[in-house]
Image (cartoon, rainbow, N blue to C red):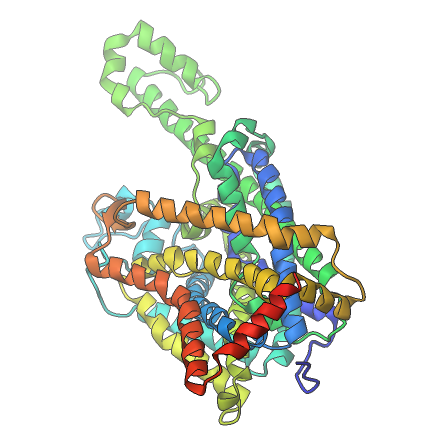
Length: 602
């Protein structure tokens, strides 16, 4: 199966950087801090690190070993193990295709914000004036300037998924730019990708370090950092914390998409993938913790700013109502004055009681936000209050772009590598042509996300395009390696590449622990989907200035079912096709003998 003519990475460092660039993505910045916030700050690190050891590192190493040994993309690698398993490769390609379709729209949003950062006043720092020039636009007043810019200026979002609209031309041009850059990054395959990863894998850390230095010097930043590292150990008794830890490890490392198999297929046969799997996994998790420190410093600044603004509004309300001197009420004693005035002048206080806000720093820090809400609203709100906010905005959105582009390299490689390995395609078309067609198809389909209802379709793909299918794919990968290909044969391949057999840790994790954890996660997701009832989504209500819960219409639910089943169905369909093909040729016995021989090696 060795292909000496296959292109390869220039050095092991280049391969490691490619894996880091792929694995370290937007989820490290906007998902992990949210989970820390939701599950007791530093206490969440205990289940997270345990799941890294039990699930993340073993599965990451296994995918690298398969790619390096077979020296083919996901389709060719699994077909080489057994023709009946070729569907695993096709399932990975379908899941990666879904991811590519919607993931690059995030890069388009980042471009949109980046271009708008080069202004004397950030456009999301204040509400626009209404047509009559008498005040601010109502939609912005009832929400906030950052929410208005995201939902109205960036997305021009409709009130529901049923309400369609034309393409947002500005956003469509940003998406075009994002796909042109991705194409240029992967046009020559591993040769061009190998050069790009030196930048996409390292520069985000430069920005994070700069943001860390700036973040910890912001007023109130330590309130957020202290909040993160104060563990709430009672959360360890919460099963949801453990499930979220396992899920975060699984999706953060990018398992099941075929990207790791594709990257490893360009390694030399004796490359030390075992050490690299551990290094990349630890870098990925370390980045999540590092990014959380930066995020919680920003959280602390934002929460303290909101808390002190709330105190100031209350102070001014008391001063204006009770005709007190400026020096009497301060931010430090405003709560004391509220209690005092309530007792000494109850009638006057009753008239303003409904206007008194409950100012609480802890509740501000407890407000958990993830995903696009954290990346494009919470961060933007914090940035607008920083001195020289334009510089910090440019740095932040460049970092988001590099994280997103780095992950896109792996996502697209997971598609173009197995397609390029197919003989009937490689004989007719050059790799550059295949790469260009893949990018063009994804771009054309991706324009749907730039319409007024595009954000709701983005949510469908994000929630259902690659969740259950990935758990299914990786579970069957482990079972196929251990119980179809044979753990003994896999150990021999391991020895042929590295000069030694895998130790007890790898064998136990592959054969027992990881499959059991994957089954548990799969069952949990199934139960959640069943108990959740009709799928719902957050729709923007411009009159209320906030998101409201709505149920997906029947066609939306049908599309969700299609997403869930399309990738998974590749596995039985390809196996059925292979079985029928062999029966037509009169060869049903031969494959059974091969599988029996493989199984006997266990």
